[in-house]
Image (tube, rainbow, N blue to C red):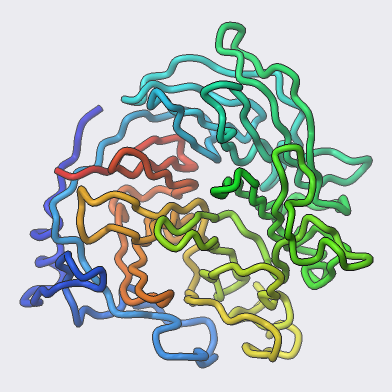
Length: 406
């Protein structure tokens, strides 16, 4: 595919002429400072942030020249992407299968044999993650919308990748975010393993069942931590609480399609959809309540306030950052390398309705800068992957891009 080269210096000077550069928040890179916030549209609400820098932070620009390459196009309806040890890509398709691509985006084969998905609305085949011992056991995990009577739910399954037969062997559902609900919306979900080989799983609150995000006997609007067999992870915060789902790690979320672990601190971070305004970035701690739908920086889609229209309440966590209007945050990844120095430990979040990737600069668990990337592609960015000093992203339009140092 044609490679489109970007010199971010020239691009940003055309937008923000005359700006200076200095050492950035990471201490060893150079970012522009004193740039206006990247968000210029009128907010949906007049709500006040809980602290300075919680929204509309100053803009930054990337100084190191980088390039963006379209590796593949028209690959279907991709939702999740992971990379194999040999640098090939395994990409889910919402219709209910996966595809293998080589390191440069060439199609190799379609993988079938998965349990049937509810391929309606926001449902379908969703995320994918490799077993920490994948090189030896060939096991993968995936999340999907599963039919349950006349309703459906978010489920997690595992099986062995059989490339010879282009199938999944021994597929088995290991976890279900019950109760089932009749809805085509807000399934979540992302999957990520921690250093102890436990699996974090996010679920949505299914839109019309939002109040269940606050209930510990419900799997809606939660982040779970489970073992590779789908059991509650040892040490989970509610494992000994009567009536609570022992798999719950945190609660009070709306629809989480973004999860990653900070490469230095080991902390779990997420981004989640708000309603009309109020998309959030949260630092997830065990047992904490993240407020939905009691507190929110958004409105109903009709423009009406939500519940008591409050943004703060004792016992409920504040987002590290929020957007109004929305980003529509889907998959995200921390940049763990140093090929592009100012990106180290930055968070890159795929925007759907916003049609760009948000680069989020974090210092001491606070957002200190934001930059919009790839807005010229006019794509809905569904997932973002870091690997080998590069970022990869898939889009709802069926594209696979690679972003690397020029």
